[in-house]
Image 1 (tube, helix red, strand yellow):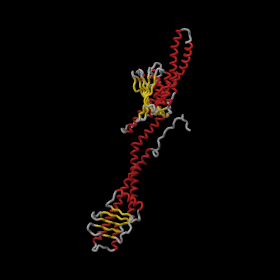
Image 2 (cartoon, helix red, strand yellow):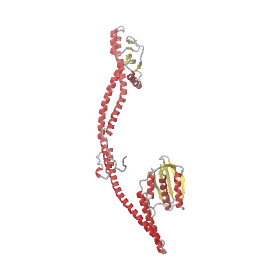
Image 3 (tube, one colour):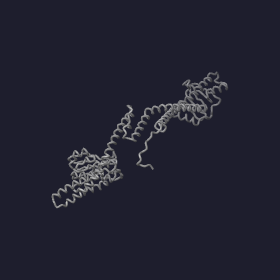
Image 4 (tube, one colour):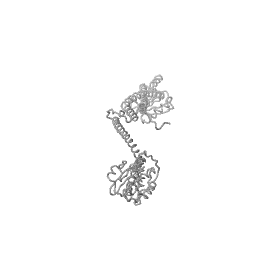
Length: 467
């Protein structure tokens, strides 16, 4: 099992054979073959119709020789030669208001399939073509249609479908080989074009991102845009800006981490010193001198605030990103344990829940308790006498909204400008300003949000949205 603390192994680009280029080549060849198949179906059916029309034309020419004879008869040898040249077993022709011409020793008594080219739909052509390819070869078929030589003459010819099937198979093989050649040539051309225009710059982007991830603090690993004016050029410029911003952010984070470590150490030592000072001030409070006792009480209060500030700073520095374990609940279930605590702490404040108490939501119970407690404590400490929690469900966004409204004097401008900034947004003297930043962080950990809707002399409204 790999050590989670060990650095990740460097990522390597896939080879051309196993990367995007090979997939593009295969897909291009497959799409060309598919297009050839779509072309093959109507072309092979057209080939079959052309073959049959040629037989009708040859049969008409053979019957014209019969028509030219004095008695309408030909000797058996000539008849056999005419049928052989037409590739038919028997044939006959009908002209309006004239007798029927027939050529052949005997009309076949059994016909396996009959086709009338005068009334032939596109679907019939395709269906009959594949029927010949799959099952033909030794069947006798009857073909009827207008003569290609004279549109007034109807030709009816009987022939075996073996030559037709062989012609269609030969045509299919030629189409197959031609399609393979076209697919390879087209695929190679498309492959080269896509590799040069798309795959090559994408591989460059991927290689740069992999190299940058190994050493993001190295300025030499920031991508240098190629100057292209298309989407990939824009991606290169955007990646460069992101890498520069990330590199600067990481440098600032490293500096802040060092400062934070120093502050945490100083706060820890200072907390011990202040605790000792608080103990000494407790001893001075027992003095019989009223002046000393009064001064000592002020010192004790200041020391307690300093200890609270140090404790909150240490706690905030040690806490990592919050991890949520959400579960399904209703707004009433989530709010009930929260309201019980502020009532005991602030007896002068009344709390009320309005709206849809049975609204479902999915949240971490502990995180939600901390969020609402911070908001309610802030409202009470600001001088509010009434806090209303109103809940409703937004069906379109699939979110449950909890609005916390108080009747306090509103937030001062300094607190409003730095509301969600740690150590900056406190509205009371001696506060750390960590309550709202922590509350927003906990809301985001549950795929939710916490925002300030409004604040002023009429009160303050915060909105908490959760899935």
